[in-house]
Image (cartoon, rainbow, N blue to C red):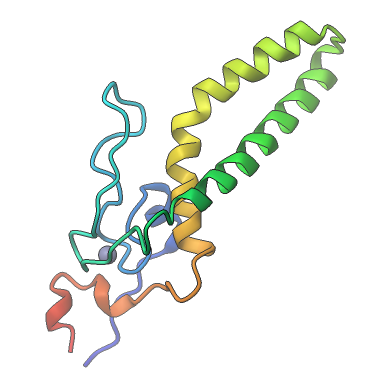
Length: 137
Ligand SMILES: [Zn+2]
């Protein structure tokens, strides 16, 4: 068998592809849609079950929380440096608005980051990236 072509991690991560094959989508619809985000149960390419055990994505709430805090601190520090404002209401409205606008992004990428980096034993398998994973060898 020849060496399978490896798919790079960053395009797969940005497009929320399966962490095991980097081919199948993890979500059924777009990030900013009117119908919310629907995560698929299994990968359409390699049949990986995304929710490894019941309630697995509760951990993604912690990842999402960390992302939200990092975004808020970064924005608050940047705006403070750029504007010099000391009005607390300005920061409250700004940071709550930012949190609302970025919540779909945090929802999606907290799950992606959980599966890509924080799940022990779940790794990329280049042989599953082939067009027909069952026929790789
Ligand atoms: Zn897959």
